[in-house]
Length: 335
Image (cartoon, rainbow, N blue to C red; front, side, top):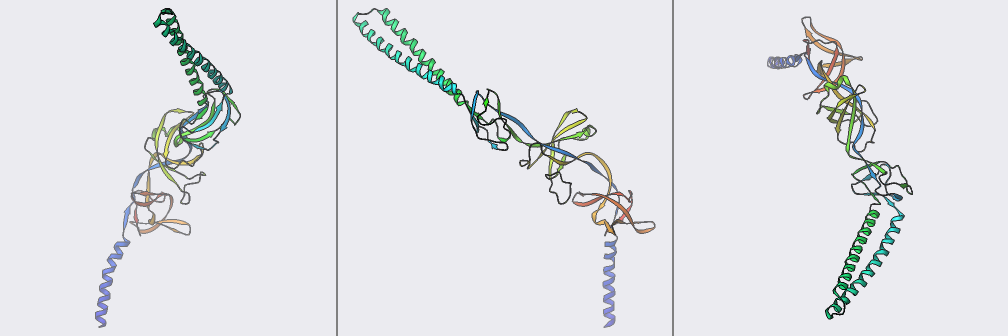
């Protein structure tokens, strides 16, 4: 019975040992891989359009319904401008219209009477033609006066200052009671959505292209780490002009609606590429504050101290860059 048990244990050990040896012998050859060289810059939030809401007539602002930061839609009334002279001119036009209407009614009555007398031969035909001309002239005068009245009503309606586009109010350079002239800006509206504008040294101009993916840090310009939430965007426009040794690029990012226009945040953008040596994260062991990688060679297996860089994801495999300690062609023993 003891011999049978001993034989079973020996068989089990002989079966497990090759698996342990195979697991312990998992190796990889260090090779340099191409990685983008990322540069940290500041991106400034900009709006696609900054449009002014202008006064269409001159007058006094009697109503101001917006302030800095207010959200508006296209067509919203942001202020009301009143010109007191328009009301007086409208009263004068109404009085003139009443007088012309009375004259026209009297002329039509005279024309009807003359037409009746013409049939009996009491008045000549020239008298009827004269009265008909008078009626036509007064009719045209009434029409012209009504047109003048419509113009004044339209001018009064243009006292409503309309938001030309949806967005947020940036500045309101006037107050209630201010006197404005035609064409004067009542409010500036940021619309069309927000984006980040980057300014980079011109040495990176040849490496930046539309479609490059960037990493955007959280508000407050925090460093890129596990605690700071980040988002991603892509370059949508690279400006063809270099001014002052800087090249400008626009980055489209989702969720910038709560940022202030002009607010800055950190952006990490690829500006070049370089060859790096990297190993899986689990190949690096830290002992007493020093990072080691287990390698094998002609002299056997040995732990070598290394200096690690930033981690990254390589096709779903978490890896870490090795700045020094390993060379291309070294054989790393993986746990």
